[in-house]
Length: 323
Ligand code: DGY
Image 1 (spheres, rainbow, N blue to C red):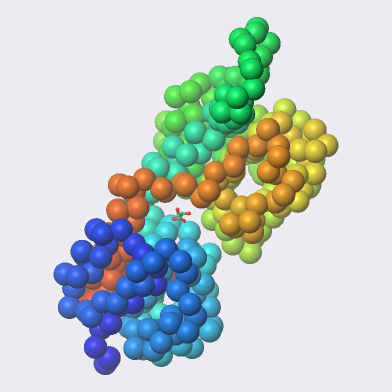
Image 2 (cartoon, protein in one colour):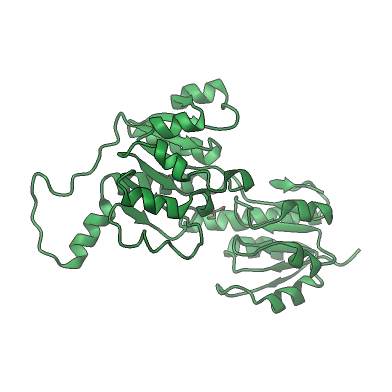
């Protein structure tokens, strides 16, 4: 058995580092917000038993080849599309993520984007900052009210449910699509109705993407989906960029087939499709879903709790896959 050695491959908040320091392992951390160079990463992985990763660290065959003693990858994110889980499993590497602790923060951002795009908040803010003269008028910058409108949630997991709860409080009707309907008491509490995906696209005034990114959800929202949506509808994405075909989104907006979009994530992050940048009907924010002091601290702490549990021979708290 190799001595436990934890390598932290991106800078994480102090609660995570403090928790790792309490373990029996030697801990090494890449202490920069710049990505770790591959050569440095591989040098550290050579003797690592645990890797703590961010969503910007790709865990693939090359990563695993560099890490012969690796037993655990602790991702500091709920999404784990940066990790080749079957490859980890094949090599006896357990993968954990950080669900739960970022539910409220991400649902807040989704609700915020709904309000921003329907009420033209970013556009109004830009107008004031531009120094352009303006004066109140009855018809200035009219947006679209959300009360009595239908929010269609694609992916009714914890974040989808938390968004539904918020949107219901704002007077929206909730439709959702999941592979399987949620429990009847949850549907009842949220006043939520299950719909097939096409039906949801057609019925919704706002479509919010809250599902994980997998092979099955790549470009789930494509030209066909935009063809089904109402021209007055808005699209919100706080999940992962490649779930939406960004070129098709730009085409739909340009053709007046969609009223607007609020995006926290991008298909080729951090690049943003150039067709989105000049548009006033689009709100663009830089992957801020979980970006609060409290939430990022809790994510780092949960990842470190998983590391500690596995080092102590206990079951991980939030496994994606245990080997
Ligand atoms: C996650 O945890 O997957 C988020 O996207 C990070 O903010």
